[in-house]
Image (cartoon, rainbow, N blue to C red; front, top):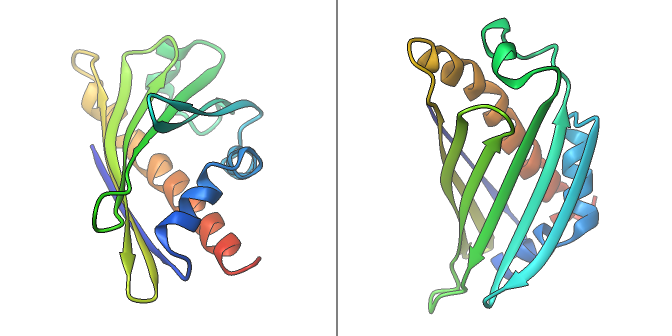
Length: 164
């Protein structure tokens, strides 16, 4: 299942990435996406910014078909490994998500590009559930919540970029 979202900001990519790299922003993102418990890490590795979160999520919105694979807790590990800027001021991130205890993963790419008056944030993500017979149903069920989480993050970024 593919998920795509984009947003524009009044700040340039350098400033947006600075917000993304703020642990307080990542904690706010975890709370806003309904995590009941979370941990955040922002560090530099081999000259790249690496942002990781681990979120324990409520189970009530998870389809019954998926609950047998994750047990009594839904724990999502997310990482963003940022590269750049390139000569054009573009930053890219490799995105990875894994659901603990389940063969459900997500990979994608995020691009922060300068525009004439700020920046554009493009997120392209694919969810894969390697479960025979029901994998596609789980992927389809995971798509809307993943898309909503990406939109929540971009809304929080826009609010911060606008001084909110």
